[in-house]
Length: 493
Picture 1 (spheres, one colour):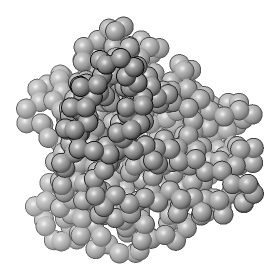
Picture 2 (cartoon, one colour):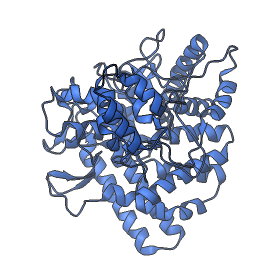
Picture 3 (cartoon, rainbow, N blue to C red):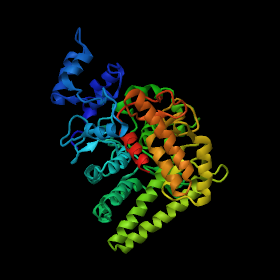
Picture 4 (tube, rainbow, N blue to C red):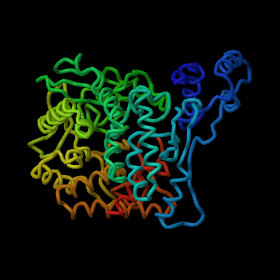
């Protein structure tokens, strides 16, 4: 990965561009492709920056390429929504056979989310695959799996997205679920054995540090409770402003109350939930973010699935020792999920605060994971389904939390991944009527916005089905990979 230090190599110029806000979106500069060797650009910048009449934006535009920075799809004639999505698959397809600027190379074509997101994203790609399965685009499903495997084999994990400044964090580990979907699509269990080494490598990444972790604390992505039980958390190895949100982070840090503000911010990004009151100590302000103090229910459920998949793959190869090892680890984690995340008082799953040795107050939709993956028992599922129906389901779909904070992963927004998780979770336990409502409410919202705008959005407003969703660090985006995928998959069910 030759470009790993690309942004750091132009740090002085990058710092000036971001702090002077010459672009409305700070992601613009992170995605820029240098037109000349970095050494030459730096030398020229140092030589010219203090001269009379120097214009920073003109300098940047002359030395970097911004082509393809944003994807916007608008057609004069409104096609039926399914036909629109079929065309979108081709329009959102990209290749990166060589590195350009911050963009990492990948061996196969891939689907990008859309809007400002013009690179391969990890957990988005699973929900994109759901739609590719419906569309019969099996080769692209295989491409996504191959790209993830390539990244795990070469970097040790799948980065948040395929850019050099994401090499310090991953995203929710969906690789084992991608394999399960591909096995189901092709009816071929040898896929598990083909990627066995990749599964093991990803598992090693998430469990790295378990030997060094002390009770009541965390090390990297591993935490131990005060009782010495092993759980996992989201984490980022860097503790500095995110290049893609550089000035935002610097300004927020000035009012931050906790330690390692930047690492807490970045660690929340590894969850995909950037941002939500879920991470805030006071439940209100991003300056109180404390992601590092939490073990998360969604992550631990996904790692249970990874352990279960490794046990299954070991069994297929008659690797008895490894089958027993991963079966035992999965069984232990299942027990820990019930012990640490199930809240007997409120009958819902919550995150766990390592230092306070208690469950967090935030009510959020990640409580669906134990039902989505079949970890919950029928009584727990019944209780969760009632809470979902009473507190999370609105006319426009399932919201992510019960708190309105202005953050995009809070009320009133409905995101595609959790509509699928909610639908599947309810189906798994026989709550078919509720599953149908989740599907109908969100799909109606997607269709309404499409009729009005000709676009499929990154997120939707679940409460006010007359408007488009908002909140967060950037405007709502159109495209949009996981919306396309989940909409098609729900329509098939």
